[in-house]
View 1 (cartoon, rainbow, N blue to C red):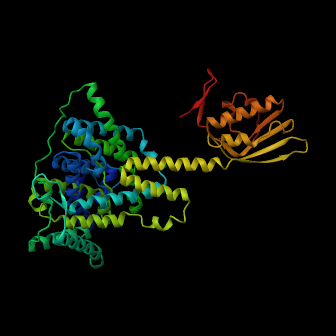
View 2: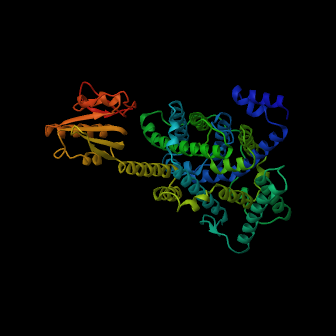
Length: 538
């Protein structure tokens, strides 16, 4: 495929000019790598999409259509080339109650609304807040997700019960030995192929060789077709058949909000992780909009919605996928499987796909986090472990929120203990307090305990040169200090406060001593002239 063909392909997809270079600058070898990487990802997507559809309680094609549509749109318009999106377990577990109580049509309506909320999040640039996620939370997220991926593969070691309707049972005896042997063989091939050749992605080689071995020798092991038939037609446009009433909105909105939040958190964290692997920056807001458009479209075409998939994204990156072509190829290959190649794909042994995912687990888990636990602050170590456990026990969104809250509280506590003052007396007899450390809600009480109004001389100077007034609690603490000295009939002077503090302080405002080296920073509060009330600002 030459550059002219690639340029025409980019034009047909309506890719903006600034993105076409990702396709037109690829060499023939690069195109082969990207396409084969996409094929590898598509093969790994099939059992995942089917399994997540079963989790949500919908037909397997609902999951496969979501993987195709979400994967294609985000590959073309997403904020990070190389990322793979599709139906995920994090979203599926939220959908279970909705489908069980209200039916699949309500799910489609929810996915449409979920997409609209994600587009709004991107339009208002809410994705930038992902930078507030600390590195220990990222490590916990990666480790927890690796464990979740590992545990998800264990279900492939289960077989149907003896009688129809019986629960699945664990493999034993030779079936288990055979399955484990094929999994191990796949992992060995993936490990060894790069040492021999880079002509074909290692995961694809593992799947292909093990599948050929199983088919040629007729080895009896579970195959993709044992999960469900993946044969189907093109997804058709379909407006969800739900009443357009306020009652419907009350049902779908809470689910849509939760799904939108989970989808964006997982997508943006995956965006950052893939960025670290490829050394390329990505647009958080652009990714939010792409995810939103993809989910809105898939809701109208009978899909269950989705978000970025860290496992498949890792497969893509490790296989050499670096541009949008790999993601586009994965989506198109998946559609081809559904339309014309279902019979072949259904013969692939699950053991080969499990082996690929086990290698993803090994590559995803942040092993260095185990060695640094004793060398980093105790709080950071606890956050890593907490986020890992919560990710495994609940879901990613809750884990990240918990991790950010704990990290923020730890940061606030550490800063609260830093407030102190160095005092000295001037030749004129005035006592000077040089405040050090930030003054905010956490340190306001400690700030007040520094001073002794009843013991101090008649003139007291409080110097904020090495401090910073952060919020309303800090301003209130300064006001309270001024009141105490005023009650004792003593003069209080405030130095090196910013111009914002000049404007926001009422009682203590006249006590500020202007200086040429006053700091210039904004205080995160606003002040109502009409009411004289301090309030939290924007």
